[in-house]
Image (spheres, helix red, strand yellow):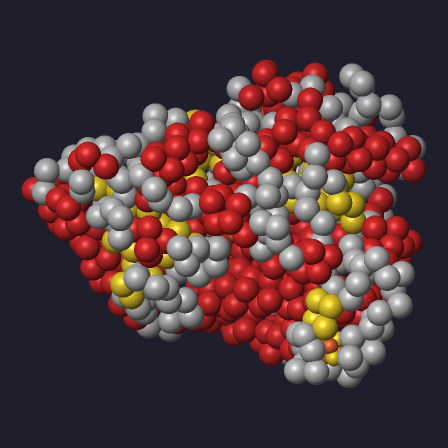
Length: 632
Ligand code: SF4
Ligand code: MSK
């Protein structure tokens, strides 16, 4: 049992599930073993009906598919199709936010207003949209339209790629990987991977890079920036995480998925006096809203709503027996939820026309009537409270305090002090050696890796060595539950240099930057560091790295690609499914650095991954001729 998770609350729920004969992802994973070796190595192909073809991994590359495709071609095609799907998911999220902003600017929505006025003006300035003499709504309208245009653009360069350091932009141009339009690069992957089109693994990967950059510096950045305009920029906020945030005596409503559009309005609906009164009349003390996965991160960052758990805890939340209603939208929602919920009183409501699930009731979301729909769904949760089966309620006690709500704009301004908004103190801390560098740890859970162990052990090992850690997605939730997002964590876990900084500023040693699309905040942060000066001219000069210790989704492949292609050494806890393709593996893990300034590494052991990262940071420090790390 202990092999499944490091999180006590999760272990408790897995045990209860087992006792009640319920199946979770861990059970289904075990039943799936042994998993297909060809699939794991990336060397099976079903692109056309002459196949499916599979390549003998021990055959020294001699075997080919019916069409003649080699292992390298097959694995490269498979990998960049993962990028296409991941980039599409992030970018469609960005498109939906742009759509809501556009509708809000035309007064066609219910429940939205433009809360991030400062961010709106900054973006309008960057997009060269006229500001003088115009209303906020007129400006917001043009910002939304301009963002929309980035998706369908057919030539030129995506606007936000110009945020990257000049040297990085020049390298992208030289390599021919600057994304022209967000959608165009995704479509081109699908074309190139059709049978008989692009049959050069390096050329295929080049298009993978281009589409991933269209995600990181396009779709995801649009999602983050326009969310900050519509819902307001996050500011540091206190909250709690883990299944113990569910309350035995209140109506528990969990928002799960990714997009903030509906969940943001649900936050308002859950405090609607009429519904709170109804909850009390039903015998509950109130309405308790909690989040799951990245929707959790969205409503945590902006409203301080507590987090019930990360990806592998979605089924466990239902097993607590205390969830009266779970609202889902898109991405990372297990199709298993519907049938599991049938064993409890829990109602699951799908809301996106793009995502329906077996045994799940659908209430379609519509921005025109967003608040009415939010109220309708919350009311369904309140009315379901009376159906709770008391004997099945087992809410674990575990919950942990946290501070979240950091952004590229606010966090380092904090470092500069209230009246001195600048990245100088961060750069100086790295230059002087008080900080060794910074690392972004992101991504999912995966039952192949002990739940949360990869995230938490890696973060602890890095902060011990004076590395500032920034986190997003399910990684952030893992660290939150382990107490690493509390400012006090610096005393317990951080090295002396990092501790001094955290003490002075009052920040945790691990900074929560938001949801998966908010990995774009990491890119923006890196640009600010370069612009501040003293640490080289390109992101690849910086003592920084990225990691995804427990990744599982195609979105994570896209993130890993745009992070590495922006010049950041990236260590993955599970390999890309390419290891059956020798030249491709060599390209990604050995030759990528000389081409684009950063390699990938595959390392499942978080302590060994930390060693690889520390060596990399020290190598970059040496190249920049920085002072030795102060307290090594
Ligand atoms: Fe086989 Fe080639 Fe068709 Fe793939 S594209 S299934 S390798 S024949
Ligand atoms: S939710 S993509 S499991 S991080 Fe963004 Fe978590 Fe991975 Fe989904």
